[in-house]
Length: 38
Image (tube, rainbow, N blue to C red; front, side):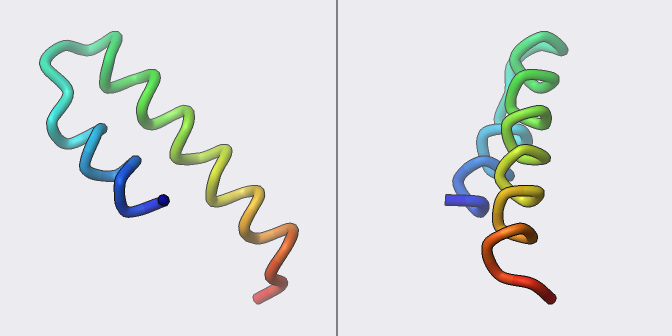
Protein backbone atom coordinates (compact mmCIF):
# COMPACT_ATOMS: atom_id res chain seq x y z
CA UNK A 1 0.00 0.00 0.00
CA UNK A 2 2.78 2.41 0.87
CA UNK A 3 4.61 1.41 -2.31
CA UNK A 4 1.47 2.21 -4.32
CA UNK A 5 1.24 5.63 -2.71
CA UNK A 6 4.90 6.30 -3.55
CA UNK A 7 4.22 5.37 -7.16
CA UNK A 8 1.14 7.60 -7.25
CA UNK A 9 3.25 10.51 -6.03
CA UNK A 10 5.92 9.77 -8.62
CA UNK A 11 3.36 9.45 -11.43
CA UNK A 12 1.40 12.56 -10.47
CA UNK A 13 0.72 14.79 -13.46
CA UNK A 14 0.50 18.04 -11.52
CA UNK A 15 1.47 19.56 -8.19
CA UNK A 16 -1.96 19.20 -6.62
CA UNK A 17 -2.15 15.49 -7.39
CA UNK A 18 1.41 14.95 -6.18
CA UNK A 19 0.72 16.89 -3.01
CA UNK A 20 -2.36 14.78 -2.27
CA UNK A 21 -0.45 11.56 -2.89
CA UNK A 22 2.42 12.66 -0.64
CA UNK A 23 -0.01 13.66 2.09
CA UNK A 24 -1.65 10.25 1.86
CA UNK A 25 1.76 8.59 1.91
CA UNK A 26 2.77 10.41 5.07
CA UNK A 27 -0.51 9.40 6.74
CA UNK A 28 0.16 5.77 5.78
CA UNK A 29 3.70 5.79 7.14
CA UNK A 30 2.55 7.47 10.36
CA UNK A 31 -0.15 4.86 10.73
CA UNK A 32 2.29 2.03 10.08
CA UNK A 33 4.67 3.48 12.66
CA UNK A 34 1.86 3.52 15.22
CA UNK A 35 0.79 -0.06 14.47
CA UNK A 36 4.26 -1.55 13.99
CA UNK A 37 6.67 0.17 16.36
CA UNK A 38 10.15 0.36 14.91
